[in-house]
Length: 255
Ligand SMILES: NC(=O)c1ccc[n+]([C@@H]2O[C@H](COP(=O)([O-])OP(=O)(O)OC[C@H]3O[C@@H](n4cnc5c(N)ncnc54)[C@H](OP(=O)(O)O)[C@@H]3O)[C@@H](O)[C@H]2O)c1
Image 1: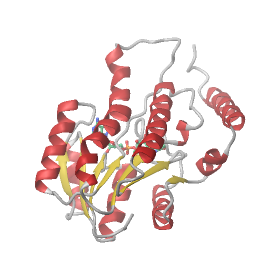
Image 2: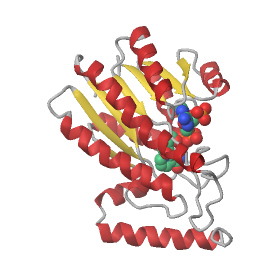
Image 3: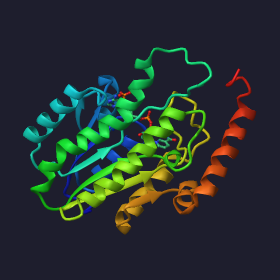
Image 4: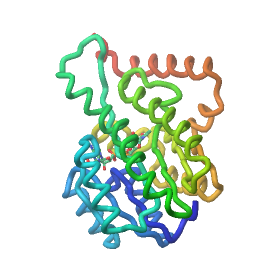
């Protein structure tokens, strides 16, 4: 992937990892379009980086995804990189299912249906161009589930699997398929304050951009680099240890 001269669509680009990527792509001389549900967050991002293009879109919604595709490809027909970054994370106690299914299904729609459908919408457009890429932001929890976020972890495992298939199926095209495996990073994921223990956002984003420059297709950071090389046994053991650690810090979670 060339790191400059692209037109890049980033879902969830108004905050956290998406915005850190948007900032870096802008600095490298790319056109960047960010989308999210909250207009005010998009405007905040634009006030900070006026070159950004913005669009409200809920990637959980099929019609919104189709509209986004039509809008982007008619306004920016040169668009050549899709970053599937939008995501939410919900803690779920499976012993106490107290919400309607819609609440749980929304996490699947955002984290799984969004990236799958957008990839499938953009492939025909990208196929006609040179130097295109689909970048999926999954998670270290795709490889080692976070037991307290069971649906989230399953969505990220699904995206990991889909990305492998996508890369093989697109091998004869000009579309590069890249997957990013963040560890815990200090953003507002899951709600403000829940990831303050995570890696500093700028250090993480700088390292991922180094991975892009190196031409890596599966890019981890810190602990997730080890998970990518870990055996199934090691990753299952890691999941158990992390769950025990979580329960120590959150003794009321399962009650
Ligand atoms: N931070 C971590 O520890 C961590 C670890 C592993 C993986 N990740 C992944 O990294 C990605 C970015 O997360 P983050 O940490 O940067 O969290 P974040 O700051 O909460 O950013 C998530 C972004 O996604 C957008 N978004 C959420 N639902 C959306 C929807 N239905 N349609 C359109 N946009 C939507 C949000 O904007 P609106 O709310 O305005 O829509 C927000 O800008 C996610 O896929 C996450 O799973 C993060």
